[in-house]
Image (cartoon, rainbow, N blue to C red; front, side, top):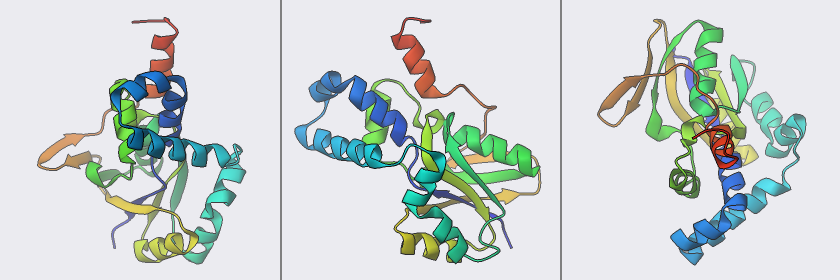
Length: 197
């Protein structure tokens, strides 16, 4: 049985929220009123969450979903956090001594997040993703059912492999996972502060 790689919640939302709040004027010039309303709603929902790690977990229903999934529901779990999903996948492979094969298109991300971050050249796959979780499980069906009951978005993005290769597929394109990079939002903030060009 394959060890499946699951992402719970959408990635890069904290990075999008930061840029939305800091660059609202530029965003209003670029995007429609409807888009801005959707973005504002996303940011407001994020604002209501508890900022503590345990608070975010409890607010999202994650512990209940994992308990509901049973003893084999996960063999690895980490909050994605700073550095984004691609850094989290690198660290996961290092800790588990495994390789992987994932489909980039299956990683859950809101379209508003993609568009806001791309406008400012912030790579969403390396961007701050507090509140999103990376799990490895041999029982993805039970875990997905538990997440659905808890109202948590959950996506199967790939599986572990026995060799060292860390493969990322994106349509017909295949590449290997790069070594960890600096958090894309942190780089953006330093550029905005004039620390480097």
